[in-house]
Length: 197
Image 1 (cartoon, helix red, strand yellow):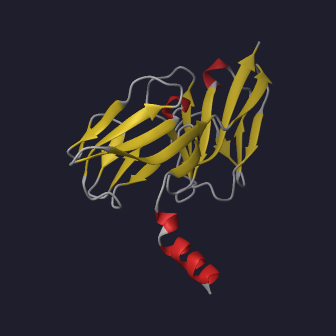
Image 2 (image 1 turned 90 degrees about the vertical axis):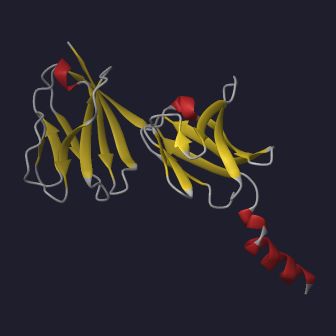
Image 3 (image 1 turned 180 degrees about the vertical axis):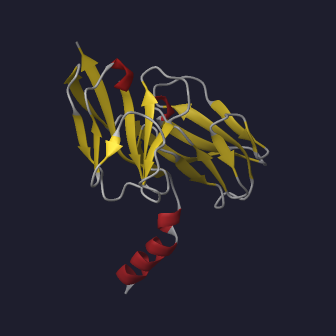
């Protein structure tokens, strides 16, 4: 009888306690639940590689432009490997609580092509859109295709034929990240194309 009670107690109370661990890919977003911490005042980030804690939010005001704050959560977007570490809540009455341990990995598939070759990639069935970001480009990702409007031409050199993405005769202009994303913008596949002469 004690064993059954302990298991039920752990499922209802124990699993809600402690540090949440998440693993995501570069470019993804992560949502930090603040609802379970009603007396929070600040959100900090402590990098995995060490260094000082960074203030991300104070009094529900974002200090990082990638952080989107709502009443009960904060969403950090455009994650990079530098975002690996712990997210910490500072409470109104003092003290801190670790709420999330995040590992951000480079989930890219590296594809090397010679100048003039053809890039051919199957579009994952769960993908809703395709974005392109040039290497070393500071601009926002360019929408190239979306499942809801597959015949719409958003620009770019690629074309879609029967759920296959094709770029004929690649050049250096095609170097970059091709991101297939789901509806919630989470990454399905990140493919890097590199053209050599």
